[in-house]
Image 1 (cartoon, rainbow, N blue to C red):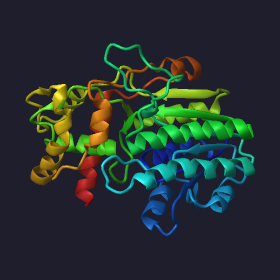
Image 2 (image 1 turned 90 degrees about the horizontal axis):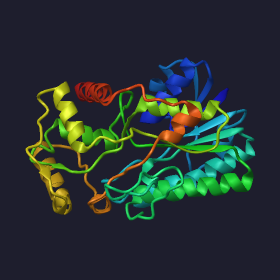
Image 3 (image 1 turned 180 degrees about the vertical axis):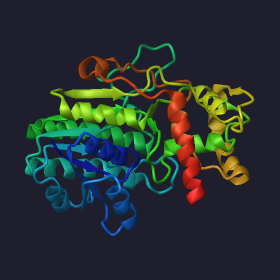
Length: 337
């Protein structure tokens, strides 16, 4: 099939281009600027991929990029929790970006759209609540990124219905694994753990983690198979933060274990500890106060049974393998810099 991957230089996009080429599909990858020679060369190193410039705020570029395309993988997004003054950029990239991209797909007569959404569009629930599934949506959108992903996917479904577009959405969690050129918020969390950010204590909630290669598999299955609707592509059950850091310690004993599990009432103080760790240890900022308020006393509890039953998706990469590869990639990037 002839494919277009938006956000082709991102963690997911890069790995998706790589696997599509491996499966001998025709691949076109869009990036914000062809003047970004580093990203252009990085993508070209994967093989016979056509690289095009297509900004999400340029409908003309998007329409041109989709000419002759069978399947669009819309992975482009602004993924950020802690960077100041990016709230509107995050929301615009999702809402305006989806509107422009989907209308361009309609004009170009693209046969199918696979949208990268997120499990953060699902509700955070009390620990003993029934698992959420693809029919559920969060109503807590105080965090800009959660608002962007939730309202963006809902808008996508509205446009798809109105324009009769064949669309599916894939809902991954925090994505780890190899193939990133710079840190995402998920990679920041792992790097912060490596540097000792949770040595004094770890929060008692889960983290919806999944390897990028398993997310790529979900996207390609959704693009190749006759299917519809939403698909949760994430570990089920999700590991806790303690699970993650203990696994990392087994991989590298230099990564410190937490001294305690913090009680829920201390969630509000995590922003202070985050800034303290940044100052003392030089760790990336990983805490957004609004997100801590959303997560307090709750977890993301969901079922990924639908994607297994409908698409035959199975996770191939264990938490230990994925974290090991992520740690290696972080170390490699640090050495390059």
